[in-house]
Length: 291
Image 1 (cartoon, rainbow, N blue to C red):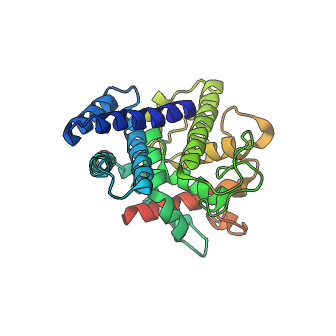
Image 2: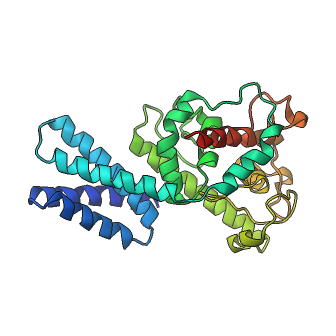
């Protein structure tokens, strides 16, 4: 996936530069790009990547000259792609996620129930990429908050903003492109972990259509998408991501460090030093409700 991102980034810039330099009309260029997006095997990812490539391309051209003749065309293409992303995301029904917040918000025992300003600043980028990969925005942003205070600092251990110990990342200032590559790695990692759990327990994502989202502690599928989130799936995901209790992946799995998932959620974990994954996810969803 990450190699695809790099190829798409350079290809989109090259194609756009060729169209612009050969005098094609802005409408023709935009329509051609949209056609390529719609025929891509992963149109959501393609749409988001085209936008960020155009955004980066615009910044590079503007850095050379604010009066460059290509800028108006690139700006218009970028604006159209931004509108397409926003429209597509707005058409996604998120009733399930709001229901999750309404159901579990009363269990939060942390003193600070609000999402930090720096996490809010990261929201659009995280939301765009979460849409592209069809994973919950709240899960991604909550993980960023836990592992690197929403990219507030660059971890000196080289494990990146998601703390992926199998990777070796930059320890200096991160660019948007470098963060996006980390997002690809994060998405691939959790997809693999969830698939491993499903295989071990003879489950499938298709079983999510019949899952009782109000139950926990059962051998059931992990159902985490851009429009769906439930407590049982968060618990299972947290165990797979941070470490399994009893080192087993079979049946009802639990985290080896309960506070990573449950910290400051309900009185039973009010003693935790930090907010756990559940609480941080609820903070993000609360912020989403007011957008």
